[in-house]
Image (cartoon, rainbow, N blue to C red; front, side):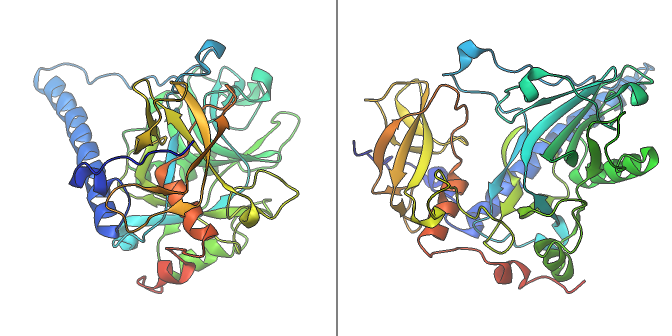
Length: 380
């Protein structure tokens, strides 16, 4: 089955094709403007309460979403964590508007701590560890830290017996998703130090917890993160770099305000591998797309890639591709062939930036190197 490409539609459609840093910059600014508007609404609500002589609104009690029931296995799954886009162009404001962190290899998860118990969900909502509770050093995550029955929600990467906190959604019942990334990271570091959370696992805490080290983007900071430089505590395996815009709020789903980048030097999984017996670059480039209710093929971030009317709808499907046309006016897959429906257990399609990143690396067309990332940065 040869997939028909999506028709050229508008400048907006071209912007979503990730063709240039200019289009990326517009998308990032649009996201920042939208988030700033949301913050203004929250602030205005507080001022209105004060003007009326009322008590300020109570802190929002954040609740981790429940895992989707099995019956929804073939339906679109709501995002419960923030997903980074892949860096296919270098932001012009990398300094001073972004931070960089080494990304440890491991299982991404959302950890919910309350009442002396911790539970973990995969990014697609599946419960990890068979749904069994465990203990960790975060507030409410074990009997030793459950002095108050308040909810803490952490966005983590699990490697071995250590949870690396990538981001923070709630802390002891206080909603932090509407705080900037810069404040959330400051809060994580400060509170983790106060609670000595980074100590090793123990009988009281099956999993140690530590904050992923992050620093403003300078040439020195990027090189240190790139080489590990001892930044990842007890984590010998690295899986690329994470970049966060310091003014961004936390938003579940794909966001241009968080980026991931990797190469063979800082990751053992520069490109996806589906067969451990073969060299990843020599395997077919397999992509996963969703056939929507109206028969369109879309990525996880909503980029339209063509007509899928002949396929089962509301289900994920696999395709092999020969590449992407990085010069096209609209998102375009090259030599795309159908490879079968995904198992119902598969819940998330690939994002367009991931498809572009993986394709260009496989075809020796890498768009961003570590040298291009540090080229415009100050030394310190």
